Amino acid sequence: MRRSRVVLAVLASCALSLGMVGPAEAGVGLPPVVAKVPTQEKVVFITIDDGWYHDPAVARTLVEERVPVSMFLLPGATSYDTQYFTGLVEEGRATVENHTVNHPDLTALDAAGKDAEVCGAGEQLKGVFGRAPKLLRPPYGAVNDEVRLAAKACGVKALVTWTHDFTTWGDVPPPTPELKSGDVVLLHFTPTLGADLRRALDAAKAAGLKPAALMPHLKAAGLV
Ligand SMILES: [Zn+2]
Image 1 (cartoon, protein in one colour):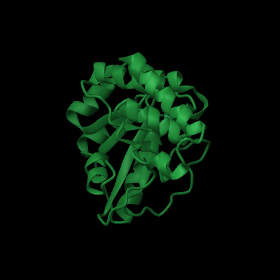
Image 2 (cartoon, protein in one colour):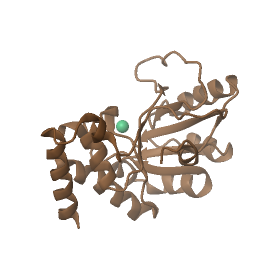
Image 3 (cartoon, helix red, strand yellow):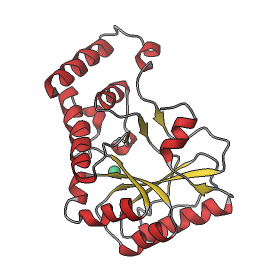
């Protein structure tokens, strides 16, 4: 099963690189890359990546305020404290999605490497959380048609990047943007997540927007 998937991906990737399919045809039938969801509804999408730092206060906020979030988790980051995430899924409105096994730039890997990273993470997360992820966040937002093809072979329905990164990467938080309908907010499980999440929720409120679940809106937009 794994082998035939890899062979198919290799053949298709050869076809892409040999120019056997043109750029227009190349994108047809591949899962979309979504940085913002086209919608008229007053909604934003909160996404949280990686999973290394587990702040109980953040979990309380997400559960008590019933915030829908997509968590793009690395299996290795959840394995030492799985309960933190199963609690969010069972008690809150969180879903677990795919962020690869080792967080590589997928565009730099061959077909077998892409398969191992994307299908491998999907299988591990399904084993732990009981549901196969349908969305992939490619690390660094690095995508091309070959990555989309590999993702499709692993059952991914859409590759989700982001509109605004609210993560505090340095000493001070980044400037808070004015959020718009359909924006995808990127956060990370870091020690500043509590404050970063609060800034994102406040910015959504200030713009009259409500956090919403991604998948139903991707479906409504005809993207999946
Ligand atoms: Zn990441």
